[in-house]
Image (spheres, rainbow, N blue to C red):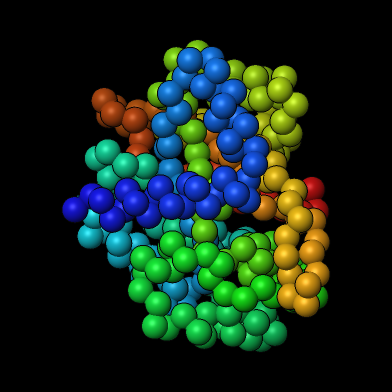
Length: 266
Ligand code: NI
């Protein structure tokens, strides 16, 4: 049945808006232009440990009618990812950090976070935030020295890292460049160097994203600290290889760049 995935996505959207105030603002700006915002995909982050792996988190989506649409490797970021598609619901992109490629200290910290989750059902992992007790600011900063992804995941737990506006469904924007011009005019900072665009129509997927929101985030011992949370993404899909329908997958190189959007050092 479709309902399980739909209710998980609805929960993740509400949770995402709490950590990403700019998403609600941008959503409202588009609506004010008469647009109906359609979600192209959501991105989830996790560790490659059996209790929380990509395959585990994918279970409720697969039982809800999703089918696998691609696998991706990000050498530099030490990630593996899979994407899933559904006839009527947004695509789901799930990546996992390849912990064995990191020093023992990083592996120990991340393993300790997932140790308590072995009895959690996949639906619970996707809908029960926070996933684990707050880490210390020192732990966050130590992870940040090795991997922005690890630090983000330790701080925020399992939740949507971004939602994505499907540009194909918009009627008042020609392309991603037009969306970028609009967003910059509204005062939003975009990820990457000008023209702030990843991918090409020939590759099937053109994307841009806002820089992640800064929010005051609670760490252990009653410490709060301003860190970057989540971002909003924009994607336009094009047919490739003579197909009549837009490309359904993702592009590893493009995503490798877009992961930079939560980079706190930018
Ligand atoms: Ni994305």
